[in-house]
Image (cartoon, rainbow, N blue to C red; front, top):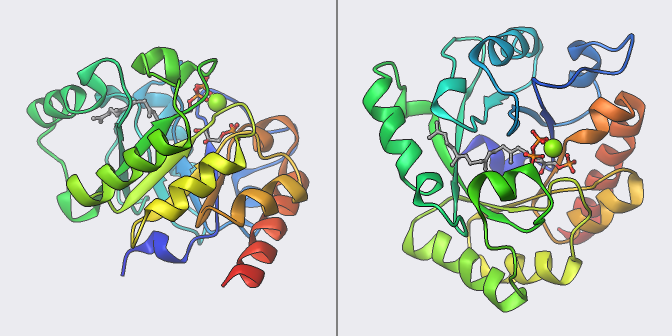
Length: 237
Ligand SMILES: CC(C)=CCC/C(C)=C/CC/C(C)=C/CC/C(C)=C/COP(=O)(O)OP(=O)(O)O
Ligand SMILES: O=P(O)(O)OC[C@@H](O)CO
Ligand SMILES: [Mg+2]
């Protein structure tokens, strides 16, 4: 069984951002979250990635690199694996297969045994990731459900990621993606900022991803979202 099948909550650390004053990656690992993903769209470098992966990898929690470009991939045995995005609604094929082909050409240390993909559906047109990938975010619930189904059944994706980075998404859209999937795991990320927003999104998604909150508000606020995710899981399943 894959690691993520048991995850209700992920903290996503952006190596281009800082933690709240006085907080450490040990504090982040102790929030009760199930895993740490390390990634961001803008300002990513190998050096910043390495610093965060090394710091997070010291604690007893799964750590996955989520690269936004081939140059931000670092290899180490400090982390558990690699979650490589594939953007279903990208406007530029670079973000579906192009960057992947280039990465494989230049990197001769890829460890396929711990490399997996995430099928992104990018929904917030204001997010950096939307402009970066030239995503078509003008999608209704039926479009999103169809992308989710295509990801799982045509492309064999094990993770589908509804991405509202920076804003709280539409629950009808997240529910439609959830209904469309059979066995794939649904990640939801974007705008989760408290117990209630976490619980609401976790009622639909298998796993919620909390990003900006850890940088802007800190670990106490993250802890509340963990509780929201766990409570939703307890009622739904
Ligand atoms: C093939 C390799 C190794 C890399 C390419 C992988 C792809 C397709 C990346 C596309 C962009 C993407 C989906 C990146 C994942 C990380 C992510 C969504 C971060 C959040 O982005 P924002 O919140 O918009 O950006 P900032 O917070 O950095 O402004
Ligand atoms: O930063 P936020 O809005 O929490 O989004 C989390 C994550 O989905 C970003 O890739
Ligand atoms: Mg962001």
